[in-house]
Amino acid sequence: MLANDLEEELEGETSLPAENCLYINGPIDANSISPAIAFIIGADAANEYEDIFVFINSPGGSLIEGFALANVIYASKIPITTVALGECDSSGLVIAMSGHRRLIAPDTSVLSHQYSAGVGMSKHADIQSRMKEFRMTADKVLNHYVKCTGLSCDDVKEHLVKDVDVYLSAQEAVDFNLFDEIFLDFAQIFSYNEDSEETVLNESTVENL
Image (cartoon, rainbow, N blue to C red; front, top):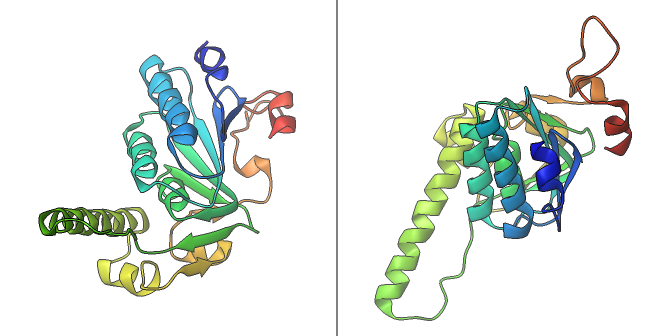
């Protein structure tokens, strides 16, 4: 199966606790995000699962990698549930808010802020090009928040993407529609068969999460 083929390739900060579950732990970079992207694309192409679950515990990192995974989540015909644990900051938040269904643990710390980058010392033409890239990325972040939260651009700027870092509790993140709900147990995450007590995952799956 697809999961078995990819299991040996998942390394670094990404793990596969169950066939349709991904756990991203640590900084957002190519090492943590590329396996997740490959898994979702493969699952979508094979139409192998009814649901995919992406658990995220991250201090943030590369926006390029964050948006790459966010775009794949958007494009997936398989419903993807994102679940924030521990901390969900910056580009980690970009990913988490992209899920078709978005859950957050009650004690999760959330950090939202503007895109920042150093221009560095270079020729005037290079600085102009770098500033254009900065503005494009800042606009991309702002538009992503608007799309995911349903808030106006002005409201996003006022409350979520400000000149200073914005730290949010799990409940505040839900109030701003960054997430759909706070989860307290796995019954809120995994689908249960109405005719039995078995989940779509086997018992060992839940124990390993």
